Image 1 (cartoon, protein in one colour):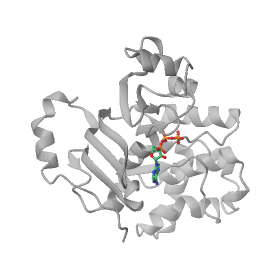
Image 2 (cartoon, rainbow, N blue to C red):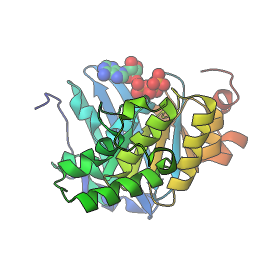
Image 3 (cartoon, helix red, strand yellow):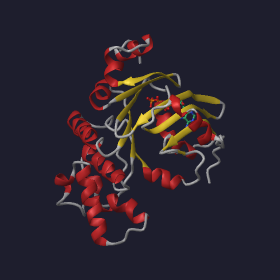
Length: 274
Ligand SMILES: Nc1ncnc2c1ncn2[C@@H]1O[C@H](COP(=O)(O)OP(=O)(O)OP(=O)(O)O)[C@@H](O)[C@H]1O
């Protein structure tokens, strides 16, 4: 059991509903007044935003501004870090996720892809079947179907279909990252969080993952942290600009890049700092 302390607002969902008129009604994820502390150090300040279903939302900002910290609050990955304290609300599908005790179920619904491919030292098939097996799916036919669908969904089926029993670690970095995405898809999530998913990849693999993200948004709500401005502009519908733990501006990606309202956003997206 982690020693993480979480300050929960027990009236969270109620309070949130009463303020609902300020929120977009079709938001999949609603974040309100979120503060996060690592011990004494505050990393997020009063973060509020609505994330719409089946859109790609990019989180941008200079190093250390809190993008990854914020991303990890969406499936409670920060719970694993000692001394983390959170105030505020995150409502996904009308449920305040910090009021619910079923973190495993939350992480099934809200999957995650990390910066570096983190496949297990086992076959491609076993990597993708791992989560479904843990959920109790044993039937070979059912597993075959899930693995094929997930690899197809991650646009890597054709490249690996003849070597499913080979070690996943024999694939290139770009292929491994797409198998990681397949592994996330295999859990049938609604939301996929991506923390700089292409930062360890070459330009061609990066493009493939970006094309994949564009295809995936018809089925999933995607939140992606990226340091790459062009990537945010290419793949996302909405962009949130973070600075020193605050959201400075959150808008349609086109607006953020072509006519930002805040001078600090403009300075960042035009490369004047960060
Ligand atoms: N486990 C931790 N314990 C203590 N402080 C942390 C921890 N993780 C992050 N921080 C601090 O919180 C702040 C936000 O970090 P975070 O990693 O979220 O920023 P980021 O915008 O994602 O940065 P980068 O782009 O460099 O990954 C930083 O000051 C960082 O040092």
